[in-house]
Image (cartoon, rainbow over all chains, first blue to last red; front, side, top):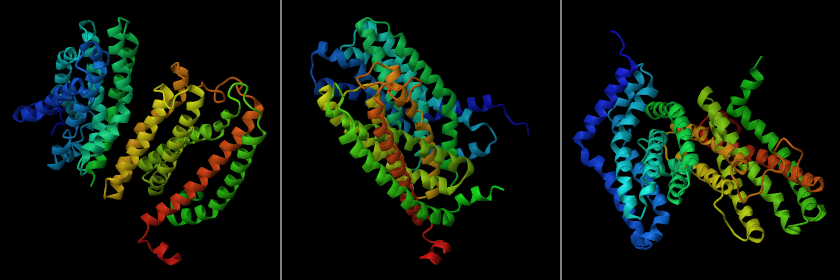
Length: 228
Length: 242
């Protein structure tokens, strides 16, 4: 039997995850709803004045995106490890890094991308000016994509652990702090009228670093979790 | 030819060796720390700007250095355990983590105490302090991940991956004062120029760092022995010597 090309295998993984998510779309929608609810908490907790809120709007949108992504990450590998699919992938002879990258990419399309698309709306609700929309979307695109891979490392390490979602957040948040710093900084610079090129380029650099080395760490972590 | 090296991976041999080394590390570190404390508090000259308050440097700088050093030791040990599957390396990483976390906490606390009179604030969210705080979270996350698994082998290997992924933070801490304009003072010693601190102040600092390193040696000997005891509690060799 000829072994399939890794691109064909990765594409199959991507399609399978999309199909599975389509059957459980309410699970996919939950992080998005959480995102909107969390951003609503801030004006209720601080001030309803849009001028004051706009100062923290970029940061609040970013933090909410971070937390919602973390919530969604817990179920990234859980069902596949539980029913033995992951073991088959490890044994399949295909490069595991590509298969998990396809899985993470699908997860990002389902959870990260909706956050990015809704971000300008919730940002405006917090007083974010229109001139910062482009930077907000671009920084969140890079940030959520990076976070999906980084979170994939954490999810692979903690799969099957009881109360794993708290541990996952504890592990991923320190690694995600630089993303948050640069992303929120880019948005606030754009709001002030300065060019956000610096932080955006740093975000892009982090994204490419994590994209190239992340799948290695994720596949190592998966092998460890599946071994027993 | 390499038997002498391979012996270090054997728990009974390591247990004996660590037991013999520990007192040497312990007493020498105590001596050097006491010497550096006296020298730094009494003999070293006053700083022209900060007067006597700068002397907290002699605890702050060595702890910060040790916090980063210990993380690298932990990550390297974890890497050796992961690649060569040497259980003792994993045990060493596990033993090093609380020591590193304590050094990090000490660095943050002494820095904060120093900052209040000098900068007028207990804390500032600049690059170096933030990345050192992230280091503390990485240590705590490592220890939390370890304790969340019942299977010791999975605990070892999973936390090894985490330690290796987190090592990127150490150069960030070190170069943070170069890459960003921060309130924290830039490097005075670990740079390619001659040091920007007076020799009379530098010598007790080096002695204190040496003392802290020896303390680390003592602490890791003791904790690694404890780790070995815990992991090998059912082994015959342990029953025979106890």
